[in-house]
Image (cartoon, rainbow, N blue to C red; front, top):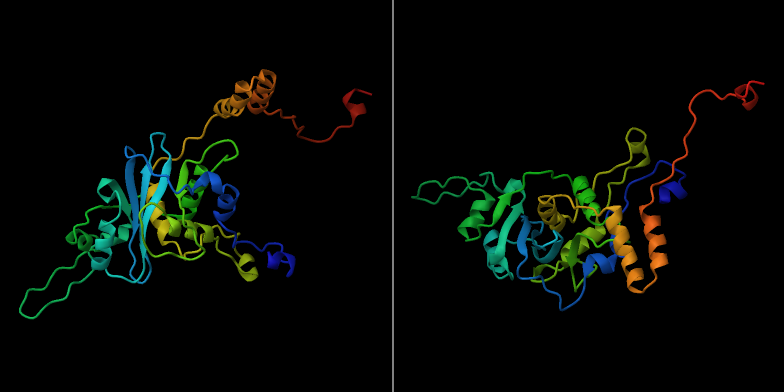
Length: 296
């Protein structure tokens, strides 16, 4: 914005927030803040996992209701610890034994970690990060094998959050303790770090010199995205949300009017929402004066 307004660089772009505008505008629809809310025990439980060493290790637990709505509800988020330190805390998470599937970064599955050799003992073979979790009795993770693009993930999330003026979101985040800074640790029924990261997600910003040879950036800044990566592995493993038809949206919109007895307003409103757009044809070709068209 500074480049466009102060430096008069009309092509300046990038740096825009990815999710924050929609989250702020529809906070009460997307974010569940009711302190008494709990998922239905009959809902399917799944998760996403992103391992880090210096960077945070993030485990996001999610629920899928009977209509296919996804609820991000519960997370473990901790930087700078070893696998054997993460495992006891992850095992304490509520509903951890109900997790039916957990999709993880595929880079934790190749056997790339060389084990040390102790004097007088045979050398140990190289192991994967997933094997080390399995040795610690956590056998949850499956490799995520679909589109890993952050841009595709952002588009999928915005599809879940489309038409929020007339429909409920099909992806919701439970958070009763949101903060402007990360909150490491175990959160049994909230996902504050996921929400914190999504509020900070931005597009890559290009300089004026870069814009001379490139198009406006669509890539997402690769920073503070560990919980969102875990969320991505879960969300992208599910089908795209089913959007309601114009008839369904109109029926929901006029229902309060019908219940109030205002049938005429309901009929008018229904007609407005389901009417086909009227297009005016555009003439293509050389302009011909009206006198010549009429044969004068």
